[in-house]
Image (cartoon, rainbow, N blue to C red):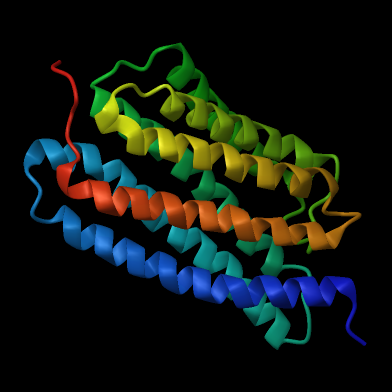
Length: 232
């Protein structure tokens, strides 16, 4: 008999298949648009292209290993957890690369907020390497799941604040990305807090994924005109 967890997983995987196809199409489009850019434009655009490439690679590993686990008869220990590890690393690097892209466009130094976000990314990556994560588990253990996700949530929200602070009509696209980063973090928070007791909360990763696609489309449209907005 189907239970709530099985229905939730099946719905998530069905969505993820469509999401990954869209994400990889976006990545190839970004790579194609990167080629004709001038050096200064390419310097600003590269962090964004790399960010979405890593996001697609990590999410592909996560979803692919979940599909393999289901094909073997269920979400057993091992495959699912290591897929989660792959996406945990790449989504952290994704946020960090967005911060780098913001700094390159503004030709800004790594001040207090960007420096804090870099520190949060390093803390997060360090926590991911510790044995308390039990990456072989299907459902991440608490309280460690929350502990390792808090730096990521702070990193995502901090990057959102950084982007929302962009000024000028030409930087409206950055403010939109900032808003989407905050929405994605708000979707992730209940999952980090209560997924062990309420598996259907995993469905909140669907709007989170849609936020990533929306950010990718914004970057895709902006990429040909991406350039520093201030002199060194």
